[in-house]
Length: 329
Image (cartoon, rainbow, N blue to C red; front, side, top):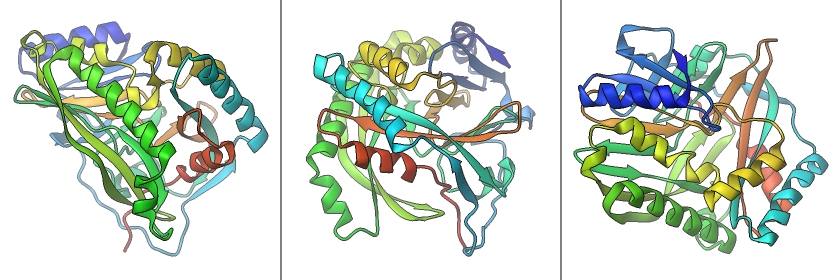
């Protein structure tokens, strides 16, 4: 089930060329990957993508309870130290957008299957004893010769007065979104004959266990080069790590992030996907709960940092992203 990233890419190329279904994942550092052939024939690893799933149970959670508690996270001072490393890199010109993330210890009275089955999310992956992701963010979709990506950048509490206009007119948020859109256009351009932005900075409303938030996304598409039509592993590997959770320029930003975060991300902010024999859909592994060997449960969260970022605001955004998007009765 677990292989090197290069092995997973080779398996994907082989199975894609033969039209055989598979489930896959790559970690952020591209050290480890996951590959499962005919994933509908097993029930250990659970998944949900637009083109296939192997679980269908839906649970409704009562309104009166808060099911996730933060036990420990970075203090503002600790976060500020990491933030300053990023700002110094931005000032040097190493990057002009970097995604800074943190690891927070949590507790929950819901087991992983309950969380998986009771959350609103278009994408989900549960690997027992490793991690659970209920991601709202598509990485890329490949269907009928078209590759599409939907980077998400910018969130705000939906209950704030004039929330939608506030986030759409926020200079820092709009600059960050423009940077990521340009990066994703360039990434898709490497594997496409032509690229276009189908829709720029549109709003989705997401329900969480703590209320509703607004999320800003864009829709970017390209016509896939013929050489990649049956080499989907090579295609995906060439696009990693995902631009929306690293930054721009990608290589130097990844090095800057490693200096600030100190610990590896593993599968957090990696990607996972499913090929049904014809189309491939994939997601960025965010909204991510991690399980360690000692029984600890951790939630990973973060956000994009630019030279215009405010440390207090970014710290609160990191904390506000620790949530369960639960269905409610």
